[in-house]
Image (cartoon, rainbow, N blue to C red; front, side, top):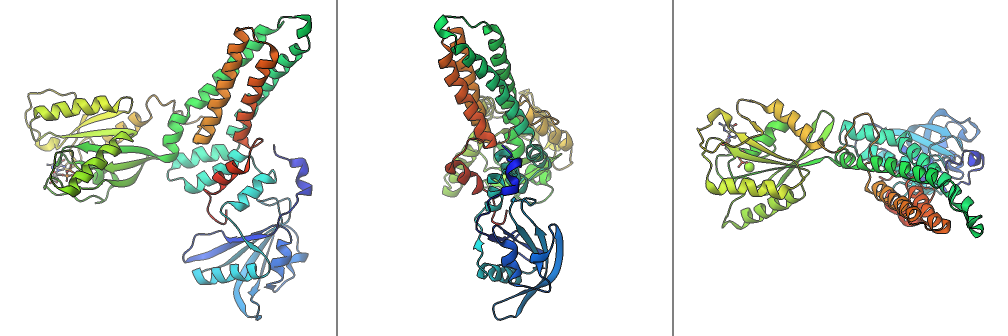
Length: 463
Ligand SMILES: Nc1nc2c(ncn2[C@@H]2O[C@H](COP(=O)(O)OP(=O)(O)O)[C@@H](O)[C@H]2O)c(=O)[nH]1
Ligand SMILES: [Mg+2]
């Protein structure tokens, strides 16, 4: 895909500009300009040096001057000449003082010089279209920007380095080899020649299907690594849910009182533990209530429970179990199904004798700090259990990639089935080509405007 050979003749689009740094006050801000005549256009508002005459990858001090000839700011302009830039086009990166107004004014001055305001992700989109990176690598750029945990950054970096692309290229090559075998046989079909190498072809297809499948399986943990583990705290009012949430995050995010029904709405807090992001959701205690607000909160708790990746049920050990409570725990455990369900006894410091012997996963005390570290480790372990997680291997983190891999695998499976059924080569070839297409959408060999729009609209302006 990377049209390295074509990079000497990149056709540059109309120049675009945007502020590439976040809005706010900072030491410096960067304005990025890329496209046809980008250097000339910036030069027309730049005083101090003729930057058009400068070499690529050089930095120049000067002033941006407005239409009246008044200085807007003192800046540094870094020049990148096509094709050696992020976008592949002529690019200037202007570092100015990091004030909100001054940055905006520098941008406006450049736009006034005949440059267009960039759309979200337009620089990266150009980089993709100019063959500087594959589509999955462009998506990884957005993932890095949005990442909220160390593991999410790691996963995105692997993708940015092209590790997903390598797998896809390998699968494609295997399928191309299979297609070649099938189509070779096509020529002989009139002579009624059986697939001489049917066995070999079958092995090739089974191998590639197995490999696609094991990559596909990593999505289970890949999704959790990228988006965070939705962890819902449920249990009766006063069980100690809010207290545990505060203990885990190390700050008083949720209000804690001894009044049952204090937490009335769900509260979401991001919590990073050993590189993994947990999206903790504190809920209103589950109980029948006449309070309209609390009732709505209970409804939201149920919804949060249904969407959870991990469920923590908390039971206050300072009270004996009631019959309803026991039924409730069983019911939730069953409803959780495949979702990991952790039963925690709280307030272990004031535990009462209890005749109902329950298998608690853990007994904790938020007050004394007892077993809190064990709980943290348990959360991480249970969140990733049976999810094909391997810290060193590549993870599929995008549902788009998962869908494409699934589609490709289904087509390979269809070809395997067809081969078993004695279908002719032209049928098998249709399946295999569909598999190739599906894989091609991941790296971007096959794409359309709709896919590109939905991908690049996730980016911020200036990236
Ligand atoms: N002794 C003791 N009290 C606790 C512990 N955890 C919470 N509590 C108390 O139990 C009451 C209810 O706690 P809260 O977190 O608001 O429960 P929630 O309704 O489930 O959110 C508060 O008075 C807390 O101080 C604990 O580990 N030990
Ligand atoms: Mg609460």
